[in-house]
Image (cartoon, rainbow, N blue to C red):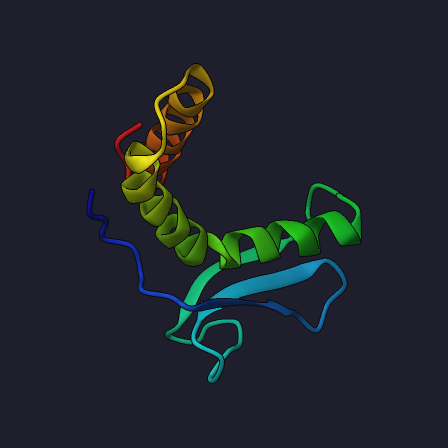
Amino acid sequence: MTTQHTPGPWFAWRGDQVGKYWVSQGSTGHGEGSSGDICIFNNNSRRDELEVAANASLIAAAPELLAALKVAWDILPALPVGHEHYQQYSQIEAAIAKATGGC
């Protein structure tokens, strides 16, 4: 389970315009058009400002979320076997596959 994504950490930043956010690699050198940009949100769909900010924050957390899922993937098989664990294992497997392009 490897991936080719830009290494984290990623950070979400609010732009100068209302509804504009970007996600970039690293905590310095951020700004639209910088080499560390991951994605830019322009609120063209007229979404609520808080929703756009939350979406940017969620995307910025992606590398850490993927790493946490991979740890859970490694730990879960050591837990006692039960139906509820199988469901979480399947959810983790599906999420990792989606994040790494294997959906």
